[in-house]
Length: 331
Image 1: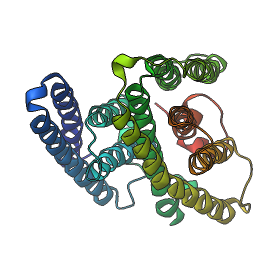
Image 2: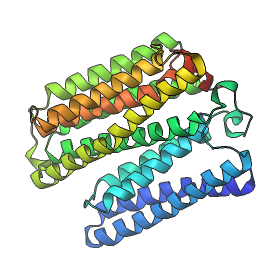
Image 3: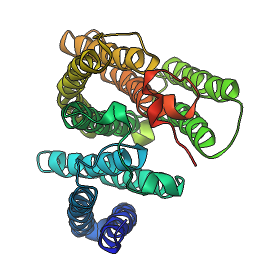
Image 4: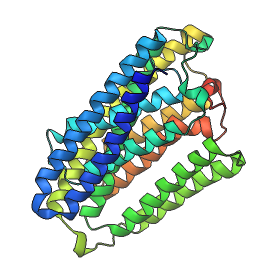
């Protein structure tokens, strides 16, 4: 990578960390809360701008569309997380979501920085990726994943503001189990069966406990007005991400037919993308027809977040294999 690209990427990463701490400070210092939130958003704008420039610089340096391996996709994901939050915050008064969005961006920056050096280098594309379909198929998917993450983060806040502290705890435990499995799969030689059991078992157990405790309300944390606001943010974020995921799946089928002569092959990652699509389709159905209360809908959104993590990162780090294994992390 060029020095310019490294400097811009590092600026974006540092900005995400700084904005996180300023957002946290805004919660601790109530007198200057609004000023600190605006300052944190300004720092995030700087990070978003720097990352945009870094992606463009990488494209010019590589002389191709800069989205071909895990490292590049993580840059796009962090870019979409920051951009998605900044876009939604223009409409909604989001006092709690900012620190979660900036923390998520910082974590994915850190994850990308720890990848093997070969992931950071600009290399010739593998034959499977030499196609104009790459820039049509992949960006909508990455942006949809980011919007689903924002929906999931908003769901945590909605549950907290609705007084469901126990459900928040168990939901965080479920997400932590999934992310831990992916981290171990990326950076260690842990047995793939154990990793898959940690992800699937931890996710299902955490969500089941969160669901079973949804009736327990803590009046200490109850704020119905804020809970309704974040329920709306969850819904709006999913309504942005869902059509993008749909476009990604359709264009993926068209690319598969162009490359392999078949629109659908039940490849593990294809199947998981379909499961994710069905999960969010279920959320939209339940939301529109009012068949669930807001708190249970938030748990559905958290479940969708876990499906998104598995679709996006799980199949490269948990040993599921398939036709998409060309994206596997290598030293």
